[in-house]
Image (cartoon, rainbow, N blue to C red; front, side, top):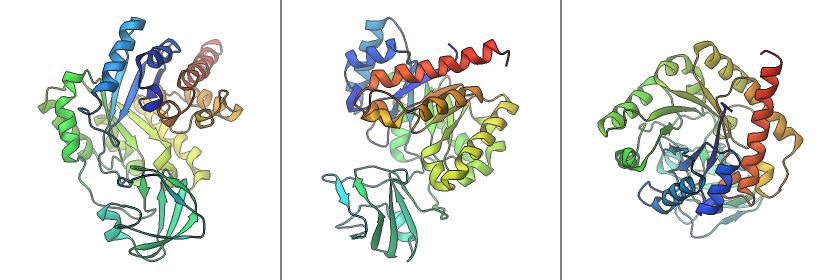
Length: 328
């Protein structure tokens, strides 16, 4: 099988036994989200991965997803229930949003949290109406549709993580919210400085600037990531499939591998069986030429991480078989 199958590390797959089952089900690589931890703090996770590799006699890729210029909610003492129609404070004493958001937000501005699952409408710089409620947890994504915030490509923590990457066996680094070739050049330079010349660089397309700059990104990325979570905040959801198709086509034309990610098997966070639509989504991503497919919360926090990988693998394999049998 040539399509790479990625899971995501998290509490639901923190032990070697579960990770070994995931590898046995077809997982070829695993993502570590550094928005929730550091590479040094994640040592128990990495130890479990290595133990699972020894148990299965298979090596898998280790993919670091950096913080980059991404906006996220700060730390919460406990999950925060946001009731639709209620009012909530922004900043101190309420939702701990980054200063970049608090400085930028104006009355009437939409604020999307957790990949758009929750939506607020700013009533002032420090207060908002909850338009779409739910439970908010620490370090979830935050977005201001139509507003660009100027942040450096890497945080200080990103640089510390990159310095440790070669010694931790990292095989690839994902740069989030790529805006221009300069972002990728900066990350590549930092990787080279720490001896990570063999580490692959993945460019995550998550906003309109990334979409518009795709042509200049392609020569500097080892793989393009169609990251549909935040990308689905940047464009209307009904336009997202067309955006995915256009990015895939451009990557095929250029000969650049690409990955499709986000909610590929979202129902399986709490269900042992996927939906028909999810199976079709994975199948069609591979038909479009995806070199990799990845799940996130499904394995990091879901109830059935090994089953998730099994269905992801089976759907990708079915698509590859279809392509071969039909000479495509």
